[in-house]
Length: 102
Image (tube, rainbow, N blue to C red):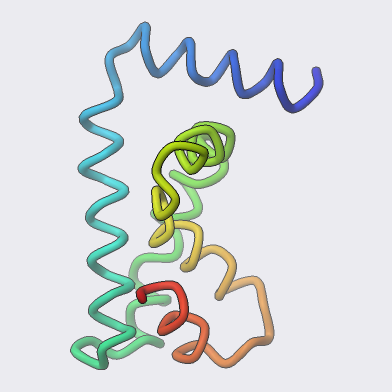
């Protein structure tokens, strides 16, 4: 299946199962976690250690949903996306988190 078909299928599941509100709360939580690390309120390395596994579990199946929502809401899912990308990159952790939380 191509990307558009996959995105449509994920959106259909989210709507059918009425997951929009729950997903919004979860994505908002991760946005707050990344903000906390970016502002040095929380230790960025500990944040990655604690929350990366859950962020990845949310990011992988809902990647297309995040991308679709970002068409309307630019910052949607930025916390989850930041945690996943940071863990899989060699970029300085706090610098990237700061950029994402602006």
